[in-house]
Amino acid sequence: MAPTKGPVFRVTGLPASQPDAELTALLEAAIHNSLTEEERSKQTVSIATAPSCYDDDEKVALVEFHGGAPAFLSELKDNPLGDWQVEMGDTDLSFDCHFFGFTQLYTQMPSMPVTADIIAITGLDGHAYGSWRGKGNLGRMWLRDFLSKDLPHCRTMIYGYNSKLSSRGVDTIMDYGWGLIEELKKVRHTEELRKRPLFFIAHSFGGIILAHCLVKAVQTNEDDHPTIASLHKATYGMLLFGIPHKGLLVDDIQKMLAGQDNHPRSMLLQQIRSKSDLLANQLVDFKNLIRDRKIASFYETGQTRQLEFDRESKRWKRTGDFVTAVDADSALLQLPEHMEEKIPLDADHSMIVKFDTRNTRGYTSARDKLRQFEQDAPRVVADRFFRPLIPRGLRRLTAVDDEVGDVGKVRAPLNLTPLSTIHIEVGSGELLAYELNDRYYIYIEDQRLCPKTKSLLLPSEAIKLGLVTSAAGSLVGSSVTSGMRCQPAGRENQGVEG
Image (tube, rainbow, N blue to C red; front, side):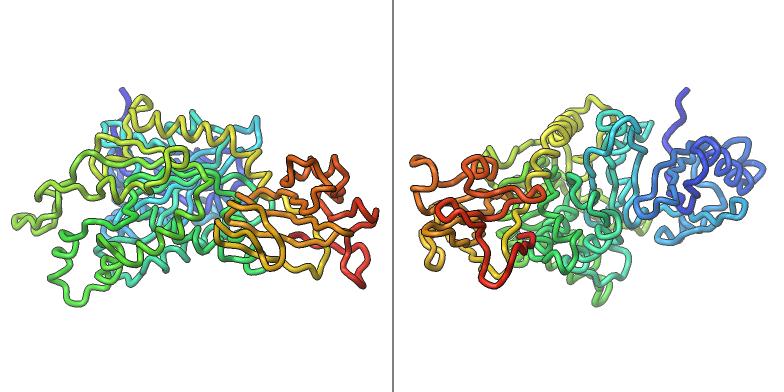
C-alpha cells in the first residue's frame, strides 16, 4: 500500500561528492538516530536528492515523514521560519520547512544537456512547496512529481520568500522584487546559465513580484549586472495563475490585522488592494515588455471563502462568505489572442495551482504549454543574444513612438517599436542595425544598395548581399559603394558589442 501524505522538509549541506545511493543511506541513518524508539517502529521516510541551485559541491534532499513530523524537528513546528541542525558524520546538515530561496526539485536526466530553467513563484502568505501540492491522499506536488517525468531535461526550481501575514515584516513589492533579483544572480551566474531559456510559473502575488523583477531587469545595463541584464532576453514564456494585475480583494485580511495596531503588513496590503495605483502603473510597463513572450493566463471560476474568526479555536479560518478573490478582469492581461492564451479553471484561488493527478485538466494544459516552450525556446532565445559588432564612437538613437518616421535626422521604417537604431554612414548610403523584438535587422536607406522591394534585411541576407561582413560570429558595417569597412575616424578595426 502506498504511504500516505506527510510533511516535507528540505535538507541542505549534503556533500555532492558522494553517490546518491550512498548519500541517501547516510541521511536515513542520521534521521534514524534522531528518532525516538517509538518513532523508529512507526515512521516511514521518503528521501529524494537533487543538485543544489547555489553550490556545485552540495546537494539538497527533500524528506517526507509519512508518520508525521518527528519529535526532533518539533522546534520547526513552533518556529516554521527557522532551521534545525543534525550531524551526519563530520557534516552538519540543516533541516527546514520554509524553503526560502531556490530549491531544485529533481535531478535532470543525464542523457541530454539542460534545456531550460523553470522557476515557480508562490503567492502571498503561501509556501514555496506546499502551495503547489495537491490535497489528495498521496499529496502529489506536480512541479516535482509530474514535471520530473514530463520535462526531465529542465532544471525545475521553486522560489520561497517570507510573506507570512503573521510575521511582522515591512516588505513592499519593491523589496520582494529585489529579493528575487538577488537570488537569481546566484543561480544564473555563468554565461551559459544566463543564456539558458527561462520559463516562469507564478501564482497570485508571485506574479506581481515577477512583473516587478522583469521591469527592473529591462532597465539594467550589462555593466550593472550581466545576469539581470540578460533576464528579459532569456525569458521565453510564462504560466500565470490567478495574478491580481489590477489588485486583490483583501478586505478580510485587513479585518484580521485591524486588531493589531500599526501592523507592518498593512502597507503591503495597500499596495496590492483592488484599484491600486502602483499596480496600475506596473501593469502598463509589464504588458509592454512581454508582448513578444509566450503567455498563458489561467483564471479561477470558483469562489473562495473569506477569512473569519473562529471563537472556539480563536483562530482565523476560511469559513466566511464566498467571493471571487481575483476575477477574470484582474487575472487577464487583456492582450490579443495571439499574445495571451486565456484559460479558465474550475477551482478557487488556492486550488488553481494544485493538481492531484497527471490527468487533471489544469495540469495537462500547463504541461502542454511548457513542452511547447521547451521545443521552441532554444532557437528563439539564442537569436536574442545575437549582437552585432559595431565600431566604437557611433551614436545610438532610440525611438519610442510607434508612428515615428524620423529618428533624429535618420529616416526609420514605420511601425517598428520598441526600436533601437545604430546609425552607420556607409559611403553615400546609410546602414542601420535595428533591434526589434530582440532580433537584429539591417536597414539600408539607400535603395541602390539592396533589392527594390526590401529595405529591412535579416543579418544573413545582408551578409549574402555583401552589405555587412561576418566577424567572430557577429556583424560589422561595410561599404558596398566605397569598398571600405565602415569605421569612425581615428580608429582602426575596433569593435564592441552593441
